[in-house]
Amino acid sequence: MGITREGRHKRRETGGRRAKFRKKRKFEMGRPAAGTKIGEPRIHEVRCRGGNTKFRALRLDSGNFSWGTEVCTRKVRVLDVTYNASNNELVRTKTLVKGAIVLIDAHPFKSWYEAHYGVKIGIKKGGGHTEVAVEDHSGKSKQIQAKFKKRQSGRTLEEALDLQFASGRMLAKITSRPGQTGRCDGYILEGPELAFYQKQLHKK
Image 1: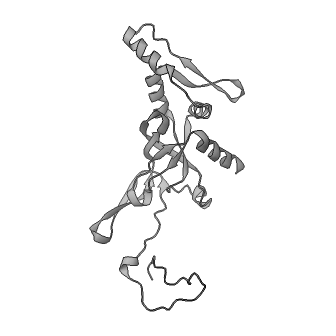
Image 2: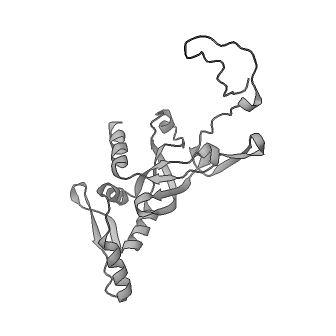
Image 3: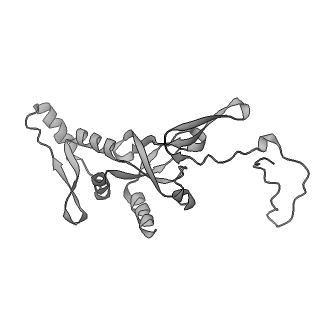
């Protein structure tokens, strides 16, 4: 018997049983879960109803992740799965699904930030703190100096993010559906959301 998505076998809201008056239909068909793992990319094309195609990612190792406050998106490596609100088994087996919290490589974002603002970030100090060092632009033209000065005037960097840059790894959330689209895209956690997930990870 194939996997089906019909709901006729369920009882009514009142608790009564429904009559079994028909068999399974092809348009109610379901398929086995993809169970996307971290590894060398392996994507299968699946023909769906209406001749449409889905891209079943069986293994992925990278994706496009966005840094919302800085409006910066980079293709980065996915290193590990750290938390999943729905099921701890998906963390143990390192399965990539929508909504999973993953560790990604921080270096592409760090190098962009340093080039854009002309500062060095993720410099470790004692006591679990970090510091930001401003680069010397005295050898550059006045136009370049003015550009960096203007950018630095409104610059802010969250302490929690700076600590992650120091470690070279960042927490991010997957927003695409790897088993449907064949992609592992998402965004970097920051602000209260980052604090919440760090607290959840600390509980574990």
